Length: 107
Image 1 (tube, rainbow, N blue to C red):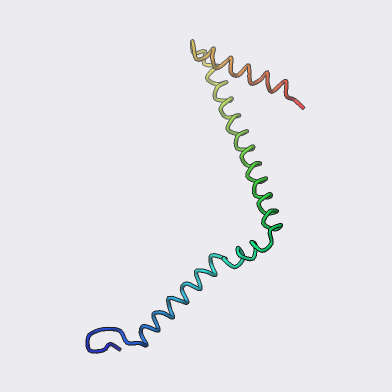
Image 2 (tube, rainbow, N blue to C red; image 1 turned 30 degrees about the vertical axis):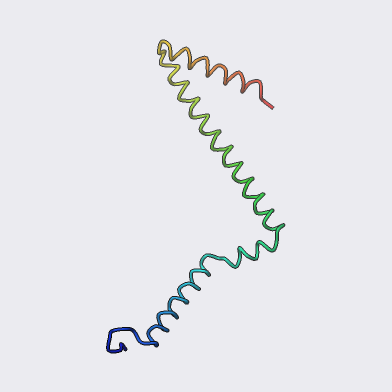
């Protein structure tokens, strides 16, 4: 109900506030803030998770760089096979250097 000026009644205001509070509570539940705050009280669990995350990130970077470097070397070998005058010699030198490094570093 509205009073004579068009302002919402106290019941409508309470209903709006109640709905807003429910919405905020639901959003906080979805953000999993409680799990995060519990994690802060268990530092060893936090450290362990960060070590695992860092290791996974490092392995991912290493694998990604390996694929990237292999692709670049493959492209350089194809360009070297085209026998372009200046670029071909330069690329052939790079490929030779990389292959020599790979032969030296076989474990």
